[in-house]
Length: 79
Image (cartoon, rainbow, N blue to C red; front, side, top):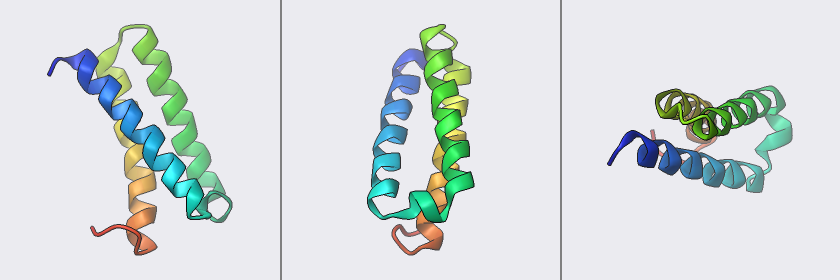
C-alpha cells in the first residue's frame, strides 16, 4: 500500500469512528476532545488534497488516538 492509499484509508477510518463516537452521545460529554479530533480530520483532508500524504496520515492518526482513547475509557472498545 502506498502513502496515498494509506492516508486515504486512515481518513475514512477516522470519519467512521467519529460517527460511532457521536452515536454513543460522547460529542457533548467530550466537547473539547471532539473538537480537537475534528480539527485534525480537517487538517488530514487538507494535506491529502495537497498530496502531502505523510502529513495527512499523521493528522488522521493523531485524531484517531484521541477518539479511541475515550472509547476505551468509556468501555466501548478494548484497549
